[in-house]
Image 1 (cartoon, helix red, strand yellow):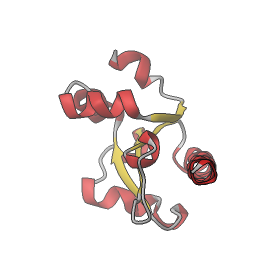
Image 2 (cartoon, one colour):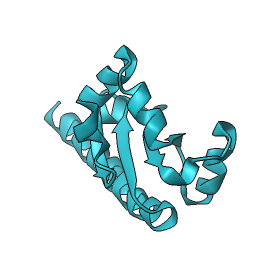
Image 3 (cartoon, one colour):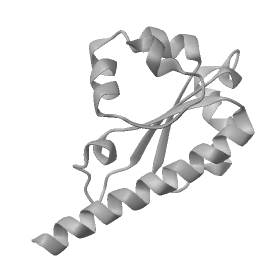
Length: 121
């Protein structure tokens, strides 16, 4: 049982490290960003079929239709990574909702260049 727990902890750590590397690439491409890992990998209850859920917040998404935003970064995404792209204004508005408040409590902050998390309090 101990080995299983260690293996799961190592797998989660590897996913977080991969997400941090991705966040650095996204910063290079988009400029200042806030990036959150949320969902099962953030909580630690992932399974074999879990995807890696990220919220990417950037001014670069302004004026870009919601469904086309991922096109700006899709070539950077590793397999299994699912991205939700928001502008800072959209994020601050969403962070007031109950579902998002739960996400923020559970999330792993990969970057907060925009300092949005201090504003969402």
